[in-house]
Amino acid sequence: MNPDESIRIAVVHHSGYGHTARQAQAVADGAAQVKGTDVLLVKVEDIEQHWDALERCEAIIFGAPTYMGSASAQFKTFMDATSRTVFAKGGLWRDKLAAGFTNSASRSGDKLATLQQLSIFAAQHGMHWVNLALPPGHNNSKSTEDTLNRHGFFLGAAAQSNADESAETAPPPADLLTAEHLGKRVASLARQLSAGRHAVA
Ligand SMILES: Cc1cc2nc3c(=O)[nH]c(=O)nc-3n(C[C@H](O)[C@H](O)[C@H](O)COP(=O)(O)O)c2cc1C
Image (cartoon, rainbow, N blue to C red):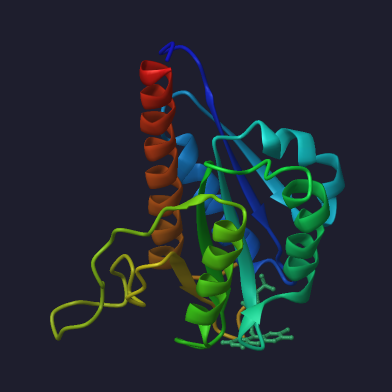
C-alpha cells in the first residue's frame, strides 16, 4: 500500500447516559494514535447517514452498554438494520476487521454475554474478530484496580461504571486506557492487513 494512504476505522456505539460514549471516545483516541488512521465515531442514533462511510472502512469497532445481560436495545436495533443494509446487499462488510467493547455497572454484570453477542454479529457479516490481547490485569495480590484489563476479558474491552457515578467520573482511567489499547491494536492490525492485501493483489 502507498504509505501515505489512510486507513479508515469506525467506532459504532450506543450510550444511554454517556458512560459507554467515554469508552467509545477512548477507543477512537487509541485508533487515532496509529499514524495514517482516519477515525469515524458514529452514534447508532445517526447511523442512517453513515452506511456508505462504513462500507469504506477497513475495520469497524462495535460498542454498547450491557443492559439486562446483552447489548442495549438501541444497539440491537442497529444490528438488525444491518441485515437489510449490509447482509442482504451481498455481505458488504465481509473481510473487514471487527472488535468490540462494553460497559456496565457491575464488575461482571454479564458483560461477557454482550461481547459474545458482538463477536457473533461480526461473524454473521464475515468479519475478522480482533481480540483484546492483554493479560488479565487484576488477578493477584500485587496487582491493583489501576491495571489495564482489570476485569480480565480476552474477547474485547470491558469497562465498569459505578451506578451512582456520572459519566464525568466513570468509567475509571484503567478502563479507558484498556479501550484505548483496543483501538490502537485494531488500527495497527488494519494497517498491516491493508498493506498485505495490496502486496498480494
Ligand atoms: C435498562 C438497563 C439495564 C441494565 N442492565 C445491566 C446489567 O445487566 N448489568 C450491569 O452490570 N449493569 C446494567 N445496567 C447498568 C448500565 O450498564 C450502566 O449504568 C452503564 O454505565 C450505562 O452505560 P451508558 O451510560 O453508556 O448507558 C443497566 C442499566 C439499564 C438502564
